[in-house]
Image (cartoon, rainbow, N blue to C red; front, side, top):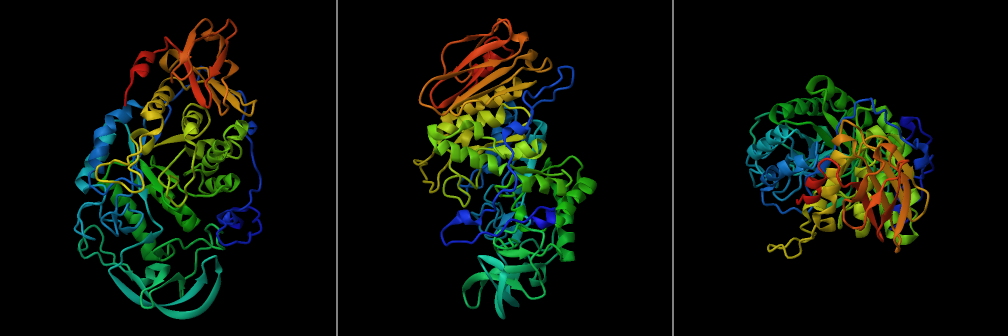
Length: 552
């Protein structure tokens, strides 16, 4: 919560039925892109590591065919070629339903190994296939990010009577009278039979629930003797409760089991870190202790990225500081900016695209994205980005300096099965720009997006930036990027460095014809086609021929 992070808590806005915007907190301080230095200079004598890239390896609508681990294993060589350094896999623990994506988590200790909930394999495949996937990813130089769901449990074996207090769903601080409810809070995992963990879960392990099984009534109940964690997001008054049976992270056996599970997981799979689900809903202190424990006792190199959905980058920056910078967060404000500006079309102001983005506050702890499984069509956090703008947005997260770690979405490379998949795949949705443009930008990121950066965010409908290159990467070749949301061809005069004088640059994406000759002072006039992006690179740059000919 804001007070916990030493931030002034803004007034809680009144909530009007049907008005989801009223649930958002007003921002305290906003930072524009100009807060960052321009130019962003990189000493050519200093080391220049290869750019990291995360790949989200799933979408919400992948069919429950138990084949996804094998599917991913088959594309690992391609992902390695594209420069992917980390692959974020979906929740691999047994779900409450055979077709569950894993966010309806049933058993942390079943990775597709035991006959539970009507299946041995998870929706994604068997444990043996998952082990093989992580081993193969390691061989290709990729770290696997395990999607850890530590907020709740679903699919209980039995119910228990519990004395509970019903809470107002719109403000969990407002409580009614005590009552006895029937809560599904019993887990004994009969199919696993105590293998890997002997812990059984009962009502003492949880703080609340949303279903009274006896009365068949939905609501939000806090169990007697339990309290909602105070160090959670203050949306809805207190947003500890999210769904299913809500874990009590202060209960010693729960805390101990989760810590032990992290070590057990390390022994099962070759991992490079975790994506932490729904962290606004459970104790900040518990999470800090969990991450610290993992770094001290499991693996000091594990990378953590948390899902904290809040359009308040000052708050998220303070959260990162509270976590001692051991964790990164997804840049929620940036994807919101992408959506807002793209849907305004030519009325959108491209100069504002990075306004108050987390990359402006904490560039070393931001994970940027354009779409993910939660924001795609039909999901609870749906955040539509206009199709013409998707390549623009990817250029802005893939090719810039000091701008976090980009995460490329599965469907933007391999397409989507859609909200209602058909057996013949007749409603399959092809990837953005035909699956051609984003791979080329990923290849450009790996090869040429290095060195100092010069920004030209000086017009509402046309902005650009350049990277001057670094001698240690692809012979020092650089790039120039121009984007426009207007209906007319545009151009931007930009500096790419005197070392590139006389070079002939062309658009890598082939959306803008012609060539640009860099003048003797290192400048060029770079055009861009209507409502698009152009990425200009020396036509004789190292590996240019390979990138031009690459097909996914």
